[in-house]
Image 1: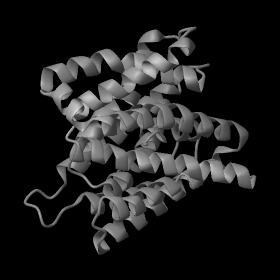
Image 2 (image 1 turned 180 degrees about the vertical axis):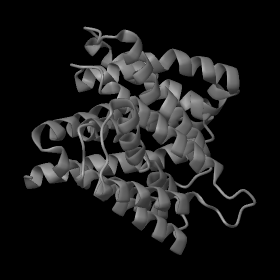
Image 3 (image 1 turned 30 degrees about the vertical axis):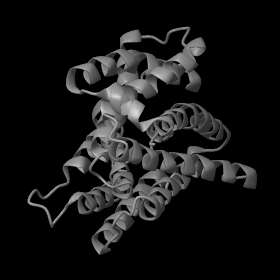
Length: 298
């Protein structure tokens, strides 16, 4: 890989990691309702990507379902979870999306797993459970991280379903994510949340900056750079570099939001990332698509 492209890959992972930190600040520090945040974010994406919406992929119902799961549905769960979960632990638990994608590809697409990949899946799940387990709390698992895990599972399901849709350009996919997410998220936020506008106005320009960063820089710019790199280099070269994303998130979480990083967290992170690396290096057919779609966290 050319040095320039490596730095671009690092920039993408840095922006994804920064987005996790920004999301934590928005829904926890600014106290913006998570469903409202998701609705506005994908509303902006839908408007900006509207020119690339057509021609509509077929079947349209599948594209709408995949768009919602990959967009508003998955991010709503993520934003709900990050309210109480630390960014660093959320980044590690999100890595469980890769083994879940692999398992779903076996069930839904009939693909096969061999022992090395099975070992990677086991290590990732063991590491993820160690991070999620909170021995100081009455409930053995962090509720926020359970929501993060649900978000990863939803994204994994969408990525496998997306494999059955052909000929969708990356920017067109972003347009359909926005379109499919706006109406359901507006319905959910108006039904389940209150005081959205007042809290947004109270947050002021900080919230506006976070929205623009999330919709413009992360969804459109970072993903466009990433799609270009995926098209230029083999997936088995790109996929291992994605580990920079959770590592950067953990570092930012410790420095910016004061995340706790004890021995249990270190062990869980190490096991999970080793498992992810094994899975990435022993990819099957679904791996390139899963890497492209599931790397949105972020």
